[in-house]
Image 1: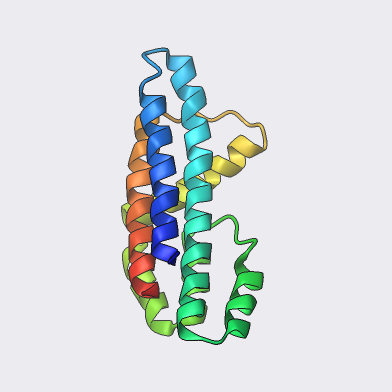
Image 2: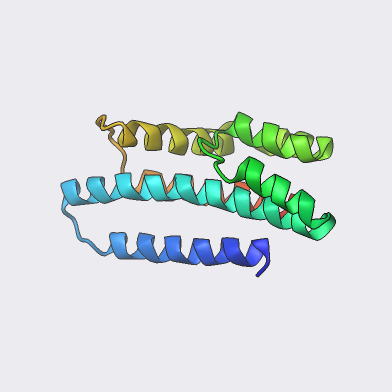
Length: 154
């Protein structure tokens, strides 16, 4: 299975979860609780997608030892804020760094950083006020970033 195929599989699972949450009705507290859960999932999706794409890139362009090295170095990739993404991809290729710096501005940077910050806040038991629509908006923008990284890795 290619990295892009695996990312598509992860995306389909996440899309199905969004669809289920959308159907919970108008209970504001329930929507808020599920929105927190979705935020955690979106952050995890970003991390897994990046890991999958860079490992697959290493598999395609190098020896098995390179793939193992990249796998070991990125398997615990977490807190995928925009600067961390730029640094990781920039370590592969300076052109990738420049490309990511070009797109990770304004709303895309805000979405990536906000999802990670919210996930950390939620994970530490602090209260957050995030709506379903906000998480949907973040997810759409995070998906743009994942698509861009997939194109870089191809």
